[in-house]
Image (cartoon, rainbow, N blue to C red):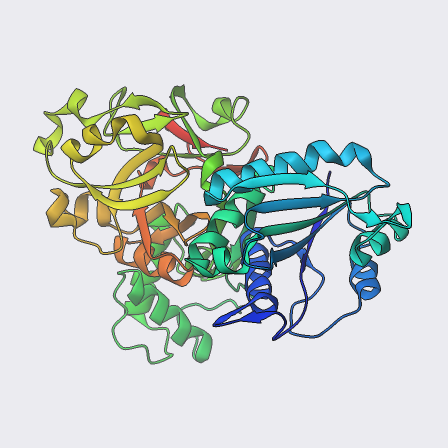
Length: 442
């Protein structure tokens, strides 16, 4: 199954029970799926579309899933309907039901077809009939529990279902660039709005230009050259496409946290990409030793106790990203004792320093040591997806603001500067010649 679409059932105001409305909630559910995976929705508003209109919209997709909850109140649990014309879809329907049950804690009742009693060969539900007519290969109606079941902790259930669908259909990672490089070349002597933007961005990055007055003078020239040096660019003070890209662009990967993995390695990026087509560097390291907690597939690869003498930082809390074995994600300060206590429940984890909130002193770091402006690698969580962001010339404070703008309420910064790497589909977006001891891959 390649291209998938979701059909938020009904329309605005449909099937209201108390404070719960199926039509409105399923639209919120659909939008959560779209934000997470950039998938196609048959409806994005409260409009009451016909079943044929919905199927026609999805006709270029291989799979269509119609999102619903059930009534009456005793119609509890998850039910997945598939077409009587497609008996081979039963296995997929059962897989969907089991995964949603595992994610939400609701009972999976059955995967089943429904036809007319007078015509057993014809599907009862119109959206299934219309989808078959349009040639959609796989069509399912999913009842995600009863209205009352889904009304309890709705936000958490939507998040759990979104993550479950990501795992089911391997919707995987999405790479994109946030920014705007449609900016003119500016240099010493230039004036105008573009220079003002440059000055604002350089000041934000910690390269002091003074007042952003739109005049490219000696102070702005000095700051631009210093920024170019940090980014590994030609230090000529001429702000063209590459310098604008460094200042304005953030390279982003969003993905289901469940697909995150880590590995201890020893090699440069150009060799590692032969093994890991998609990866970033992870924890800090000293010599050939990875520092801090790193775990993958439920197995601890490294822990702080192995490096208790490193910079005297043992027992200080560290910014930590954890995917637990039940699929939940926690990001924030964790001591070595915290990590040891949860050892048996860690599916994946990595450590750097915390960004939201940012308090390097609490972790035993200094701004000049790890918080300086450099090529920065960060990982955060937006409530449903892991968010990886890599940008040039970003201080810890800039990294924190970046992750907030990307919708993250929690995030950590990983080893950065000369260790910063990002490879997507074997393409080196950021790459260095430094020998790495650990990576995160997907």
